[in-house]
Length: 384
Image 1 (cartoon, rainbow, N blue to C red):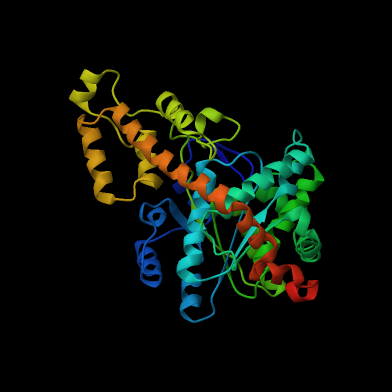
Image 2 (cartoon, rainbow, N blue to C red):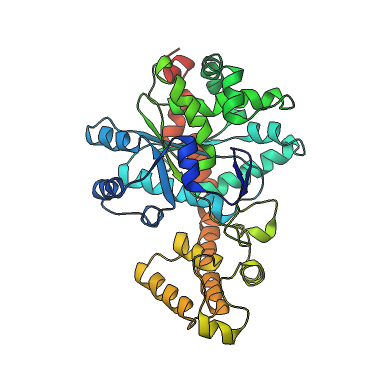
């Protein structure tokens, strides 16, 4: 079955092993997982369950950390609509990395990219999405004094000088080969990769980028030009996609509400969506299910529990066995997931309403790192 993975489109049944081969990344080994656990003092669920599965130079990040050189974290969000649970997961993992390694985080909000990519968006609409997305990101667990969230359009004065340095290092033939640009691609989108590469140079040490694997093409180009500009090749740690409610062979999409649980979905909406749309690995009838059991490997409710919503390994195995044996019905499995999702969303919304605006202010303008980034002139930031 064919599939497509680019920074702007993900379609079909994704073969992650093929992506590793095609992109030239490496699978995260058990040795690397153990090393992270040893340095961090704990192991995050998303690593333990192999949601983050691939990397570039993660071993160098850990070696340089042990040598006292340190590193910084960089990730981002394209504000193309409301955020769903799948969008938030990489930010939760990035916040954990910040906590256990005590490092700075830079979060780019690519309002420019989304505007030039999708002609249906008006600029005001993109800005509304950006502001709402930033509120959701700010309450994901980041240290407000060591986190800088910036919108490209607002921080462009600081980005543009090095973006030009980056742009003249990249030929159109390279960009076309990596991103699949065609004669109908607008020139705004062709230039945009130069801007996304710039934050990898915010510090004179190596960046680690937690992201879904569809963003990797940017880092392939960055690694080709970084050293010629006097910076480190970036490292990256890639996640798989949280499957949509409708089946494991696709990507959750904001444009298809039936595939996703959004961060502002209320309890009743969550229940209706899971009960109606969550693809089942169960049998057609209760009698047949009791006899034959279900298939947790294709059941979306179980996969969501496995990837994020059930922390307890023993409880998860208990659920897997009960479902596979037919003891647990599909409706019971869905109900368990619904309860987990609603607890998570209730806590998220509480933080957003109580702390969101205050945290946004600190991370964008008033926190220690934010103030430093706004006060720097071009030569301080970029060495140009």
